[in-house]
Image (cartoon, rainbow, N blue to C red; front, top):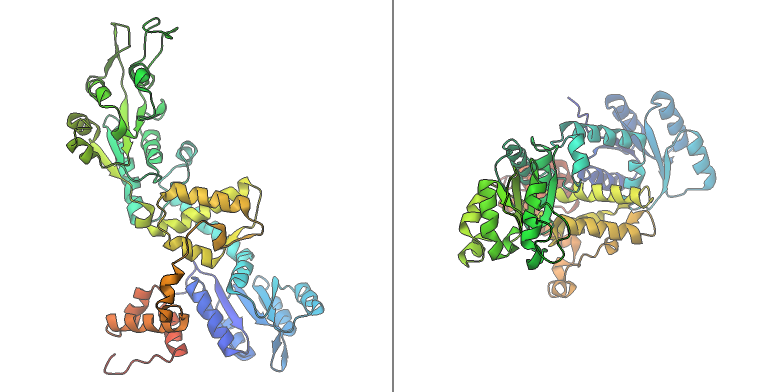
Length: 463
């Protein structure tokens, strides 16, 4: 049964090395690719496979590529065709476009050039739209919820999917307090908003408070409110956070930094759901839920007597930990694509793409500032971008230490490094080529091509 979720590409060119290299690039880029070095081979593949895109050399032995183009567009009108040639001229380009070619590339060209050309084809756009629709259909976040939270909280990793599931579980228990932990920039407030807007409290206020940012002189007034005339400057009655959040959610960010003298009063209010304004004697009943967050190890704060153990237990009914971005690298790509799309639209810079080199470097970067750092990095790159391709130099990512590479010159030789890596993978997998390919993160056919290219053989005794 043929795959329906990949674009099928046929490369028709008489240069075998060229078709092999381009075919390898397409397979590694998750396309379904076929290669032909003669017109007869090409026609046979076109007959047996539902090809979406034809990469056609305009000069083939004994045949005019434009004649092939005309024939292909007549038999397969919906097939996209990209013409390539090392001997291009304007007249040929014009004829190719009139006959229905989608694009024209002159040899030699970079892989990024052909990738950009493919991404502009209708077939590619249709597939991307289909995938987008599927993602929206299967999303854990509803459209209503999307409007309430920052969409930077995107991910496909098992870790982040588990965080989502824990958030939805917490939402089903609207009276239980939740503690969210994770490094700075991981999206703790977004998870708090998901919990609130997925719960029965969603129609009431969500109030976010930075526990460390309130001055000590106003701590009680801010949380409990005050009565007019209770202190200098109290010119009116004021409701505090607990009262404002009646029926809603109070989000206490940086909870580990809350002043110790306030913690006992917070504990009592959380337990009794009764507060008294500063300067007043009347008790006020309020029903609120507390979601707190910290990027500190709160257990160590408790050990050092800087945070009350009883308050910690009260706030930690349900615990959700958000892993750092470097611990879930498969989320970097969807986040990166989302931010590029969002800021390209915001700054009116359409058709922006990211080079493969930049993609690879960002995939390996540790992002100490997590998602927030990635978001700011993309915004800066797009603001300063001159063309429509974002290169590695557009991102403030430190390159690998070149001086250390100079001490090991073999590591700079890409060919030797590739051969060494393939041999190590084969040995570690006991020469099982399918397992070696999986370990290398490439397709089995791609491994075979690389072994053939570098003359790497596996003896019968080894296999």
